[in-house]
Image (cartoon, rainbow, N blue to C red; front, top):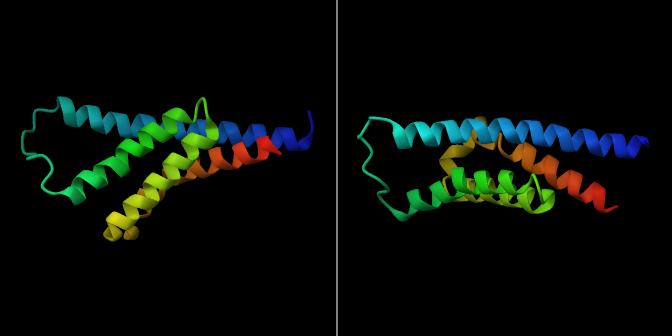
Length: 117
């Protein structure tokens, strides 16, 4: 095994581990919200909230889920979703935690590009 292939394999596994942790974290909160007894939510109040929900967590879940099979497609969906979230909700730029899902997306995309070469 060459140094290049060891490096790309390492990137792939770091992306998979970090992506799996983020998926588990997001799914935990979605399931807790769906099955929780708190009925204080009134749903979406405007289109901005609907778009925000589509960009995060939906695009992150879809992107990181697809990345297990198609690294490039999943990584790009994840990256675009988080960037679109910041465009729709610029107030979230202050929170570094909202940018964490970009990390496995970038790693998956990097792996995909390196694999193609």
